[in-house]
Amino acid sequence: MKGVILHGGHGTRLRPLTHTGPKQLIPVANKPISQYVLEDLKNAGVKDVVFIVGGTMPEKVRDYYGDGTKFGINVNYVEQNKPGGIAQAVGLTESFVGNNDFVVYLGDNLLRGGITDIAKAFEQKKFDAMVLLCKVEHPQQFGVAEFDKQGKLQRLVEKPKEPPSNYALTGIYFFTPLIFKMIKKLKPSWRGELEITEAIQMLLEEGYHVGYRIVEGWWKDTERWRIFWRQTFWFWMIWNRRWRLMWMGLLARKGLCWQKCDSQ
Image (tube, rainbow, N blue to C red; front, side, top):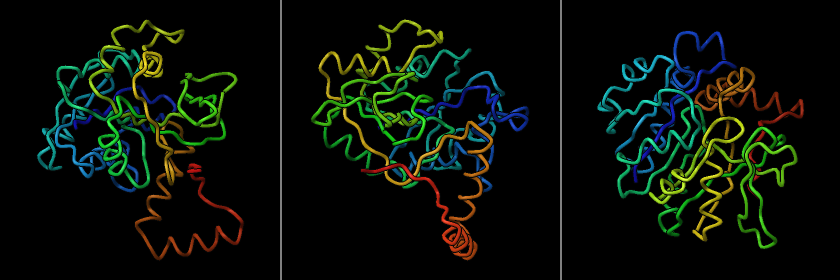
């Protein structure tokens, strides 16, 4: 299995931090966000990764990750000249992926527990694609899954005004090379982008085996200030046991908790 890390976007909602580099290189607990992604892929057994870099100082990404030697993984780069959607970015990796299964991971996502077990399930069940879902309070902001009465994935809708469920697509997808065939059929959406949800929907409509997994624990993307600072605080807490115990006790007394994805 190979890995694809999406490292583009302008990060406008995190300015001024993104005036000096890509949002994925902003440190959370003293480590760039996308380094957590790279390490998660490595821990899942991925040995070859490609970064899709955009127009926001891609040289900084290359300078930091290099060829991947210092991280123990092979790193390659592909340029996405202008934002055209996740599906367009994935389509640029066809020659890199070849005949291999691969995982697409947005470089500004953080997932507690990692993808190791999920990657094993994808390979064992011989899915043609698999998406990770998380129950959220405001699904209108995400791609959303719809299920039939048997709980089977039926439809994916990008940022619907009336969501069919509260289960949102996270920024992590597992694919076989079949997805490239679907991407080539896509036309730009109302946003002017090639939507990965539409490509996956094509797989469903053509009878391919698309699975899903509900994320256990928490998942966050770091595209807003509030979320970014919350993540920084909680990652610091995770790795500082004494302070974590103190703060957890304080939060418990106040009836507060970290919001988790509903794994039911």
